[in-house]
Length: 430
Ligand code: SF4
Image (tube, rainbow, N blue to C red; front, top):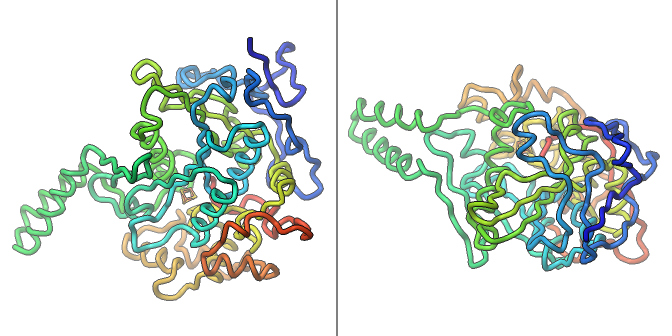
């Protein structure tokens, strides 16, 4: 028989559950906010205990009904526990929470999506991958990298099919091509030839067919709708889904638990997220593949997350220590002016710099990243968010280096909140 595990004293028997719970918003959270959920928990792995969400999931629409889940299976029933690891504090908090619950390291995998792989243009902070690798090595947990070929920029400049997804599988790299990829490549080759031959009709014909397959030539929109904020969908969500559907270890005959670090305090949209649900890649009938999603930190405040990182004396990504409060894409479409000013300070703004890629792309595309003004006007004379107190972190960020030996704080050193720990909602949502 399975017990239930609510983690808090919430009483489901009274029916006192609400759809949109009150939360400590990140913007209201500070070092003085009491720790509510970030305190130590008892191991439950191997004890037949099912995790029940603190607030029941939504059941309003047909879509909600399809994804509704009462409770997770006992953690030991899953074959793999996959953490979507961005290198940020929330995904790190998830890993530490899983370890505290007793999930064996061998069962956990960190899946990290690269955002600019295969492109000459950059999107990720140079330190993000070294930090991610260092954490995986220091914790002794397997890391698997994945990406959409050409990353963010191949989507922005997309004419024709979206690019293939590549990921590290059990036995080397695996590439999954979208259906229209081959035809798109043929058409692009024909276009090149038509251009050489000066065949305008053929050029136009190929262009129109490619356009029918897919056409962006614009930045993602700043909004919650993933069809227009396509970067999150095409570079992260769909890459993970493709990996689940095609990887040797997750394709069929398995039970998977996907873990991600979204919290209600981050945004109005996230307040309504379910803590547990059936994931879209669940294919019990067709492939005997069970896929559940768990957002263990959904009710945690920012302060709670820092508490667990502090408890394990871990250095968070040095991006926090230099004053950033989000460590998503360096050139995130949601960056505020001071964040952009920080990007300029760290990586320059001249020709070939990351910041200048945006300036040039706006000119080429005739489309601005912000929906009102160009990037230079948007940033204006904003004061940079960069804090130069922690010189070691600054060097790590600027040089793009971080070693496994630096993941844990050495004995005798006091753990301190990084400069960007409580700066409010500046930066991207994923
Ligand atoms: S972090 Fe920002 S730019 Fe990157 S995928 Fe998410 S929303 Fe898009």
